[in-house]
Image (cartoon, rainbow, N blue to C red; front, top):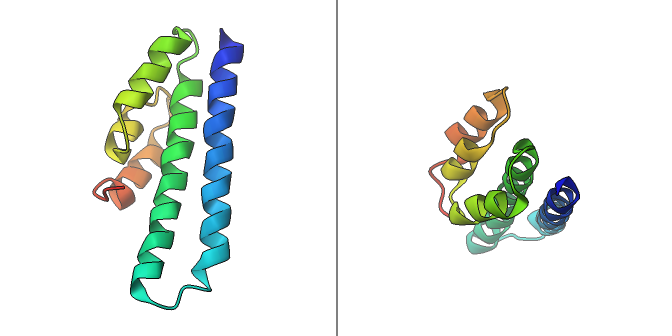
Length: 105
């Protein structure tokens, strides 16, 4: 079962890398405001994918289907994704929530 969770997490991780790469590629090329907003959306989507990856990997003993469904129920809500993680050190999640928790994706 852990292999299933690792594969799901790997998929989210790859999506995060893709969003980050697109952000990096477009950030300097977008000179108008709406283009910058779109690239910022890519960056928040990268955070979302990373948080989903962390949430899945942090629930070590739970059924992969249950963990995946719990993550999916969070949808694009960064505050819910920060809350669902089961890691002991919450500092990074608190910081992300403070900075991005109010943004809608």
